[in-house]
Image 1 (tube, rainbow, N blue to C red):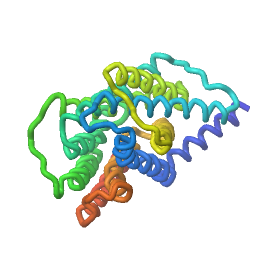
Image 2: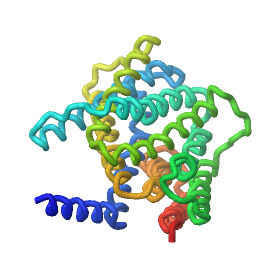
Image 3: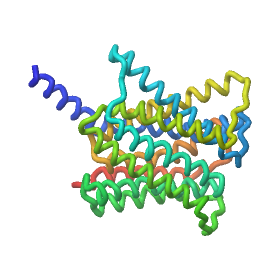
Image 4: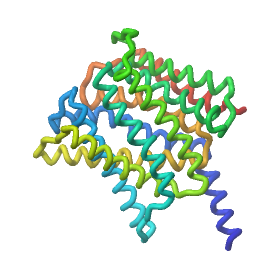
Length: 314
């Protein structure tokens, strides 16, 4: 029986490390995350949240993540026919801190003090930062020339899709670009923590409870600092539930991929996030975006970058 379970785990691990499966699952995650860009803007409009109302934005995000955690816990409790109880409180607290609180509170504050273009480009460096953290801080894999080259190519793709037709200055402020950079660093550390903790803890349990804890803390912070949501339309609450689903589904699937694959291989697919964000913003918001040759060039660079990073150990 023990041998049978061991063989089953090996088969499962091999399937989740098989490149076509990785591409499919990572693509679904990036598509979901990409849809969050226009959905956040739609949500701000439906809930009457002003662009500079950081407290309400944090409240909005906190409710979203608390919903995401509740969805993960309920779904997998029903699926497994038993309530998923929290364990490893230190690991939950660490992930909640890096993945949710330190990533999104600085992000929303920074976004209110800098431009969307700068934010997108700084966030675009997350893949390269994640690889550096995984290789140099946690020692989870080797840093190779191919991984560096692939990261640079993917990053240039993000720069192209954000800069063409836009203006950007070189000014730097701690509350603006500095906070976006803190958010990016926090995201990078969270990926390596997931990889480390998944060796002896249930990633689904970690995913659900870190979202729930982080979401409740963000909701509290947003509310006590004056954040409020104003809406009587059922569409706004349907949207909020969908955004909770985005985080619940994408992050849980992403955590499972990180459990069975190198951090660099999985993180490289995050280069697709801003590409999906631009395309879906054009479709859902009818924004005048870079839908011409520059988007195709950016997509090409991103795809080449992903391929080079994924072959970085060969």
